[in-house]
Length: 183
Length: 198
Image (cartoon, rainbow over all chains, first blue to last red; front, side):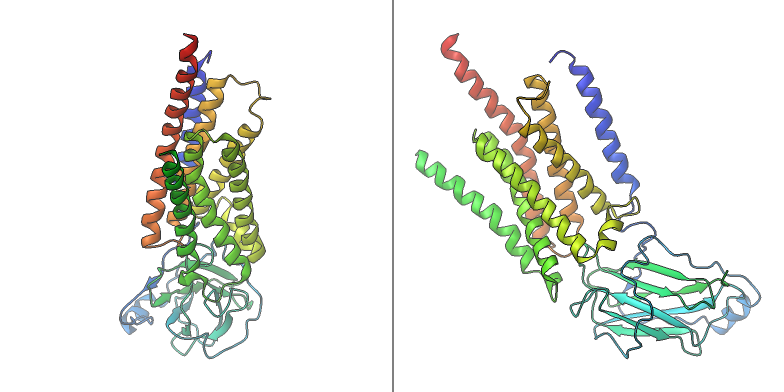
């Protein structure tokens, strides 16, 4: 080997690049926060005092994150449930005034033992308190980590497509949406 | 004595191949899974075993088998990735995009390094590289493939969790230790060949 220092320098630079590339990535993908929970279900609806404080304010709108539209098929059928053993729930509010939005359609899709993300999807509507809730079979990690998708795509507000992750032993995922005015 | 050693080597190889694939295929993440996911999981688990056996073959001086298994490992990884694209191309493209998770970033780099190490092996006599330079590059890429390949498998939920994680770490350590061990064994063999001429 005529110039070992040159080879050593090259490999050191490549190693630094590999370490930087790995460290730079997010564990579950960009913006895919862990929203899994276990134990007693907490109230997803803000308390009256909180609602009063927030009236007239502007809440930060939820932004779509990369991968949020993966396997999305518009107009998921409304179903009573997608199985049992896991719950996806959340509060849907308007960015303008932070008010809870009733009768808004949210679409949910995830991989479970009953099917992949393209088969296992449903639409669910928010109640008078702006809360949606759907029971499903537990999500399974077909692509390396249990993940769920929640989306809004009905045009009254700006579209939002969310990809979030949970742990294998979680019982529930809480995904709140704050919708911005469309356009 | 040589027969016993060959038998022990073969038994070790069978265990290294059988344990990861058996654990992966019996995990609950395959409940209701498509045949593409089953194929991907099988190919991935077998690729882990191949990565561990490769340095052992090099250490034993079984270079022809080492070359064949290198090609097999590359094919297994391509089948693993191809089956994931067949399952969901959107998820697969997302995984290898700049927004993909850490485990996929590791897998992408390990796959590029695997292409490199197999290419180095296939073109050994045709590349304008000195023998020492070739060996360092080959060993370096092998370490990258094993470290990031095992890292990818450890961070991946589902196929090899709990006992599977322990198996992966043990196999990864064996594979990584096997690289300098193969280098030392090759040096000893070269010295033995040179002795009669000294």
